[in-house]
Length: 299
Image (cartoon, rainbow, N blue to C red; front, top):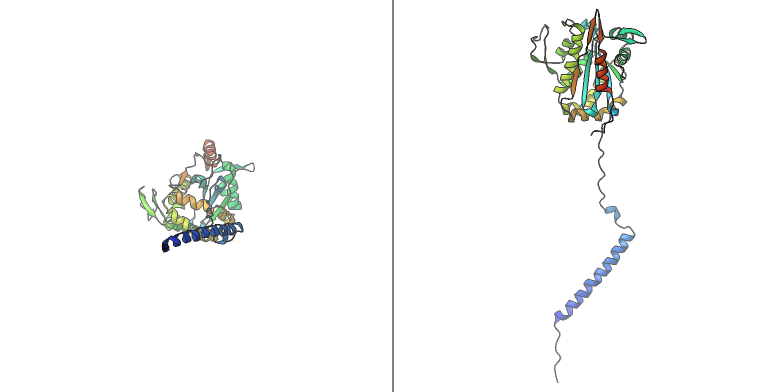
């Protein structure tokens, strides 16, 4: 009688394992389909990151401020400087206005000093509007403590002093000026060319201070410094809302700009005690710094 051959264990195990594996694939596929169909487990899915909002600077961030330095104890006329800030172009312009500058305001010839003494910084801003034919958004009257604070925030300046003032080189060479020296310099009343030269000194010195400051440091401390300076101001229509609306544009200008500041010397002629600005100079200022040409938003 012939003997039956024994099957090897491997010949049974292999088909069994294949059957189990195929079964698991089928069951797993069905389970995955149901899982996905009913939306189970979506809470654990990774969502794409939300795009970070990037602030943009537009022409609406441009603004104009008239600064008035009033220090009667210095026995000096008030100092008037117009600032045109254009964050969209990363540029700031300063124009010193001599105190004896004349313009027609409300049908009468006036000078900026008399307007200010009659009705304060708001009247001086109105005079400046009539002079340049532009809108002066805001004004700020600065006293000695506020000026010292502004100079300390910007960090002083290296500036060529050519005037016979005690404590200064006076030979036209660059020297570092701290806040107290800056105050003495801009309130000096004996410049050879009078108020026209003093207006030039005030605007050029401010411009140099801006360009020499550490832009990133200035921007990082802007919130605290704005609060400190505005609290020292006795007459201003600048509000916290104005600051909040433009602070990002201002910070961007200081951190990304380079040599952002410039100044202009008022062109005109002296007529007795009055300074009469050049009409061509006024028109060029309006065209070059106040005309808002269509410009794309800047980062």
